[in-house]
Amino acid sequence: NAGVMQNPRHLVRRRGQEARLRCSPMKGHSHVYWYRQLPEEGLKFMVYLQKENIIDESGMPKERFSAEFPKEGPSILRIQQVVRGDSAAYFCASSPPQDPRNQPQHFGDGTRLSIL
Amino acid sequence: KQEVTQIPAALSVPEGENLVLNCSFTDSAIYNLQWFRQDPGKGLTSLLLIQSSQREQTSGRLNASLDKSSGRSTLYIAASQPGDSATYLCAPEGSGSRLTFGEGTQLTVNP
Image 1 (cartoon, each protein chain N blue to C red):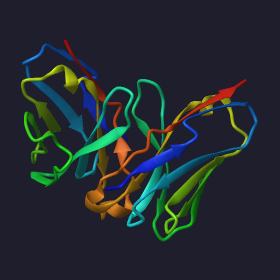
Image 2 (image 1 turned 45 degrees about the vertical axis):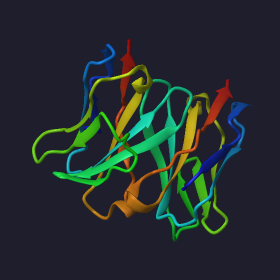
Image 3 (image 1 turned 45 degrees about the horizontal axis):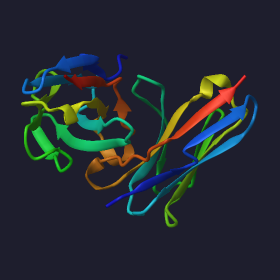
Image 4 (image 1 turned 90 degrees about the horizontal axis):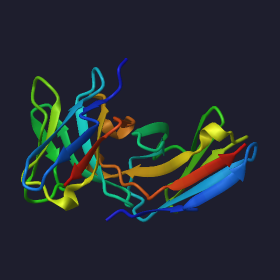
């Protein structure tokens, strides 16, 4: 089985542009999570989604960031008008449709976003 | 707010040693706790998941214990190998299915 697939692996944007990060969960998984790892810091939770629903977005910055997980297709993390401080590694994880509290989260290899 | 501390921050050992990585967390209201390894430039690989009702889990040379009431978990690695070199992360899962990560222990196993 393919694991969690994230693309692109590396993304370079200039300040003010938009960044779109994609995540395809493992086959059969219906829960998706996004985490961010800033330079020299630990991973921080951003958002938890199920198909067509945002379950918990309490870790998302209030402005410029949005996430979706449509009925068809990958989950998208969108960052508008990027700034230098958005430079980080963004990781996506997924878990099966069973009670997520009993299931491990499986991570992708991340997207490394660099802002010029 | 959950806070996770991992000790030591870095560890360098000769091949073959048994070692213990420590994790402490402030909020004991967790559903489970996962241990991961992260290789440079890579994502996280799940090593073990311990449910809140369990005391320990084993996988090969790895054994993880959980003392939920005191907010502690340990990862024991037996007969360490150079391929074990990585950053090890502890992450309790709390409400909303969110994982809270420590900053990790960077392990180097020298041949």
